[in-house]
Length: 209
Length: 353
Image (cartoon, rainbow over all chains, first blue to last red; front, top):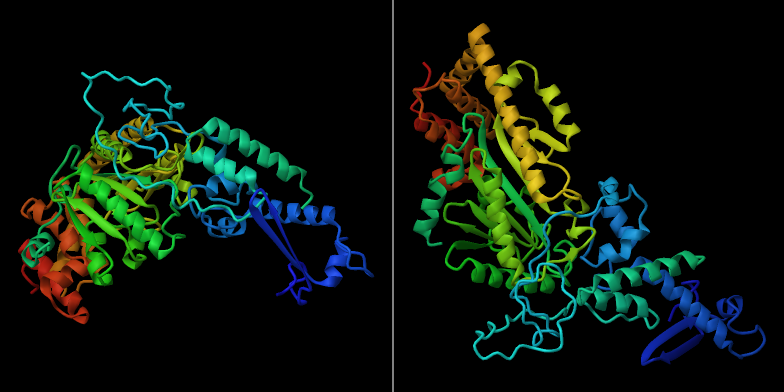
């Protein structure tokens, strides 16, 4: 296996770590391991703090550039002027300078106009609890108590709308924020999603790479 | 469609083109188009073939549920370029769809006024096409269509960016409105550059009638909104309606002015085009379109009353490459000859000399 760092030499050190059930792996050649402070030149000892730091940097840079859903990178978006999937706007939007996407001056504007109707919609998680069919705006989670009135007509059977099957589980063990963001978006919890997006922005700004 | 139905479809012309709508002396047709995408699926240009297939099946199922028995469905996969071009010529498909990726489909109502394309640049493009100036009605049609679909498909939406689309130029409402205009008066009075400036100043664009980046032929232009973000749909509809009505009045004034002061100018243009038609033995697609649009304008100004407007308008579709191919069944190298014969026969114009 080739070294993750120099991409040239054969990796002589392979490290695997499992955090919260997620696996992280690093393949590195000896000179690069020494250069990264992972191991002293003369011994086979291993510095776990340096390893954690390397993983953190790797994943931060990946988070910043690759859409977890469609794997489109920021560079691809800038080059083609097109997003790969709806989630790309969350992932890449703040990464791009104005002018990199067409009509970037529009970015100062906020959407005005209609929103998707949600009537008849059955979100997989809330399907049982959903009882109001005509909520125009994304509503907060339905109240726990449900009307059990026998006179009310039964709600129509749920449509076979598939779950968010395309949102693949992230392979990055430390991409907790991205995962949380995707879940928030999938749940239409936009306030929470915006808060997470801000956290990601802060992280990126603090990241020297 | 059965072979007979297909033959009827090809040899008829779309009602939005054949009929004369409001302000029909200047406005030929109105189009409203909405870009919509389903949350959780990659956009068609980035999606894998299985993803596109899954999305197509999902979208077609939704279309069948919200408009049962209304649409004819066309699977674009088995069609060659000539077969796809046919739908492009009827304004049911964008030009880029002639080379579409696999798992693309088209659904359209029998009068072709309401249609949907699956797996174009976006997952769904919803379209309403109406004769004359009917922006509010066209918007109402796609708005309702969109509402019904949004109950069955989870459309990707962001409170700040609006409806999410593959190209950021469609963010926000995803609504593109356009009107096809015949402006021989303003063109002859060299007023188009001034009109273009006014159009751009308020965020609209004026282009040649056959779409992006094309020059106007036969004094026919397409006016559309440029921006989709930051302005509500009704506001775009109203602004475009007001501007178009203003343009219609200006065009009528220009025609009146020409008729009063230089009555021979328009007559000359039309006479020359009729002469070309009767003296030619070959006619390219663009030449035919140019002559036909001039005749449409000439009909509005009262110069070619002896020709049937319905026939002229139908020829705008029937003289196009793929329609000609399906109607005449002749080889491609004989198209120009067949086109010339077809146009002349339909308009009952005898050959020169």
